[in-house]
Length: 158
Image (cartoon, rainbow, N blue to C red; front, side):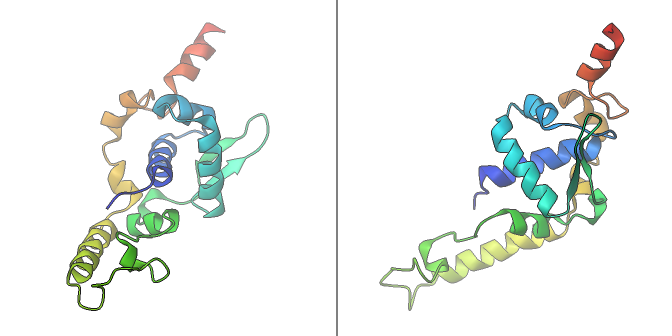
């Protein structure tokens, strides 16, 4: 099973937004993860549409969490982000074209494996992913207060 790049980037963006205590920008996230700014625009728009984050326009605007990370279940989130979970063509009735489909045992095994994957995700929330904030701060160029080191340096130099 493989998640799309869109889901991967969405999860990474949420990790950054969730541990940062102040608003951030798409540019902040793009710089930290070296992700395309244009790709992140689509991701942030989608996360906002889902009600997970909120975006504030204007000079002092930015991106912030709309929900508490503990309320964001990973299974629910991933199923909303992924377009489908067709591990093999026979999972999709329109694409199924396998001659052994009526007696195939592989489909059932793969369905069970997919259910196990979802079962594990269901046990965790976004809060569980960001529980190690102290270790994440330096990797995401944030201070222990959740502020961007780059912004602090800029403000200090003014």
